Image: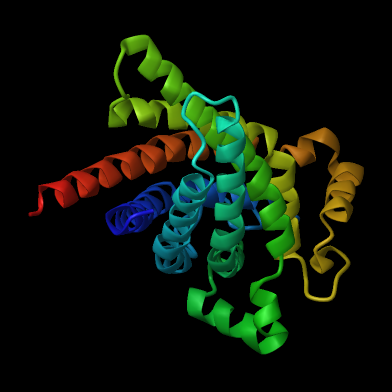
Length: 274
């Protein structure tokens, strides 16, 4: 990928990530509390829905920037012809690689954020310090495997679907989709992907919120899913599905729309320079 394309993806991804994470933070808090083992109201209910926002504000830009730089770079490396039937596979591989890299930044931010969301009376920095003192760096990466195992299936659904919907819309109207049309495609793709991957999200939340030393804290995603199924059944596996779908549909609209808009603007700006 050339330098302008690299820079545009880096900046556009960061801008999109910050925009969506801060705008939709309250919905994410409600979803986390619905999935919490202590129950929605004991976890804080509707009180302090911006608890943990500093962690998100710090992690959003580098997390989203890392994802999109990797995503665009892998697409460029594979260089599949746009008309090829292998194009969805290219998008799947690029999205998976992007998630593995982005999760190195996302997981520590997510661990601190989720603990703050269910302990609204504790400050973000205090929670961060407690994790480091009690569990070390390993504590910040608790749930890394479960997060990657949630994000990769999510991206395997969302990004090929997003790219396919854009391609279909472009073909129907005879020109490349506008940024708002890309955003609409992102909303549909995100909402569908969110629904089908909710059980993995529930398992990830339980692992991150589990007490240090407990069997759930070990990070075994199948064990976490089985524990939820045994105690709460199907409703437990899909706890928070509606706020998750709402947040990610809106998030897909803002995130992917903002990404396309910002990237197009930056590339156009680069072409105008002498």
